[in-house]
Amino acid sequence: MLRSLARLAPALRLTRVTSAFGAVANVWFVILWTRATPEEAARSALVTGSVWYDLFGGFLIATGLYGFAAAGNDVLDVRRDRALRPDRPIASGALSAEAAVAVTTCSLVAAGLGATMLSLWSVRALLVVALAILFYNFAGRHFPSVRVVLLGLIYAMHMFIPNPQLAFVWPVWIVMTHGLAVSAVTHTLAGGRPPLTRRSMIAATVGWLFWSGALLGVGLWRTGSIWPDWAGNTGAILVGALALVFAALVYRIARKGPSRHAADRVMRFGAFWLALYGGAWLLGQGHTNEGIAITLVAVVGFAGAVGLHELAARLERPIDYRM
Image (cartoon, rainbow, N blue to C red; front, side, top):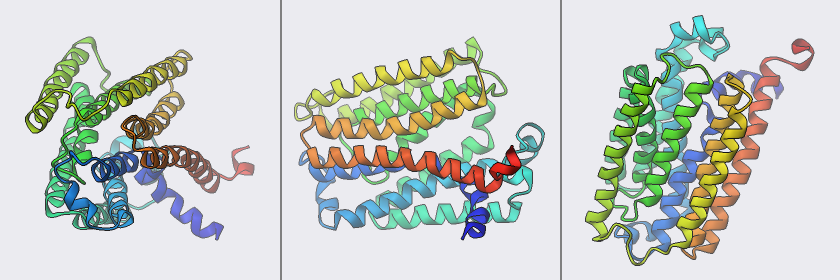
């Protein structure tokens, strides 16, 4: 049993599956929000089937895309990792390049299968997000301003996969902004190269403003209002409070100084907060059962992520060896 888990550990690290629960929570939020909100245009298409069927499809989409992005990044970056991050699975030799390519391919296939469980438009939206991920891995990550904006945008885009006709886009905007901010902070704390300069931060801010306008413009076009009458304010208040708490938490972590450990902590808490945002939106709208369910995903996902992270570390480097 332990030997099998030890063989699986490099693949878990390659796909960074321990942080994927935030992406799962985002997709599940859209599914539950659409099914529970009569004003959403695509509601009739989702409520005809079983909620568990839709959620399983959403799980495949989120974990598959996350694994595709993370594993593809390592496959393309293996030479750089051998010089700067020799502990990564491919660079350390724990996982062969061929196996990594197989994991990347299977992850995308799983995401595609999940999209086919929802709708043809979901498949088309998935292809757009996959292309954005490929662009990021091949070129976008080499330019700091493009890197942080594109990561936030990818987080936003994948929320449209289960419902490309989503009308209430403010939760998507929150996720995009959160993803951009977490990307910028973790890049700085980890000492990413090239660094985020003042000029690149200005460029990233301009990019964020542009895509914010485009996203909110879609919401205006679909609902006829920046903030539709049928969307309550309680969710926005809860989300705003959560954002302030997260900012204070990041400040406390960053105050100890830049390090890869600090960057990993911010990334892990950032994924946890994505799920909390979804629960807050649902609870604020009066969808109590759905809100509690997403909040439980946040708690269980965070606990599981910490446990898997520690398990993978112990399997790859036993305690007696590390001591």
